[in-house]
Length: 299
Image 1 (cartoon, helix red, strand yellow):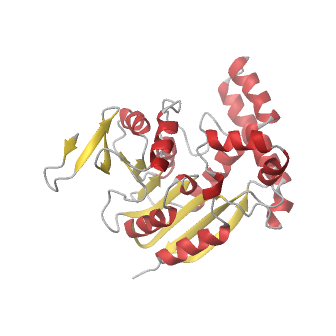
Image 2: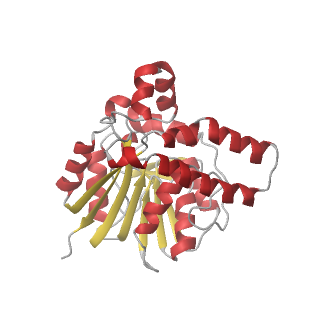
Image 3: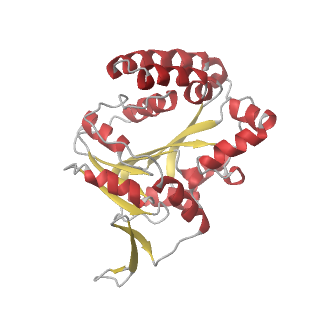
């Protein structure tokens, strides 16, 4: 145990990283999530531009586009809640010359991120519900596929709001329960055992999944304005990312050894095609997940 000389709080150390959660323990939900992502295979970092990581999927491609649309200004501070091993922040920093702060409960992930020793990025092992940052520390915050993993996501949204400056923006991607017409809903109905196993492996507790209405309510209650939601993950995203197409591509490029730059070039175009196939469903409001974005009112 470590004790803070200034405030007297005690913190546990895991993987050589101080876990900024007061005391030795935390709740069942947090312990479950930490165990899953401490065991995650962490990849080494490279000088990738945004959208050119080694595991491009349609979800990754879409997240990259959404983050790029925020247009981070050079020198701005970007907060990544649920940063894992820092890959997304490394790519954002390479593309937009920003300062970054990554927060994750997984001490193994934070250790990997810190090992890269990026001069403009800092990483902390902490809870999203108690961010170790002062008020108004950041201009932009992102939480991609994170809120559904938390014991108290509404509190995490309030914490992000606290850490943003006036005019700051928060972008999140979250699976939702109001997903009629999506592949997620079809799987839950027709392949319940396989679906339950998949979501459990990812650290999802379906009973805790929010609705899109609940997400909007959390953002508005926290004080965000201009809250906007858009649907994603209608049908082909899951098929592309997790099913036959991506398995074939992985076999070609990672098993048979076709050059990786060609993999990137082909997969980007394939992702665009499969995204286009979902356009009609997305326009009808069909999707297993949503992007939600809000802004802090200017002072």
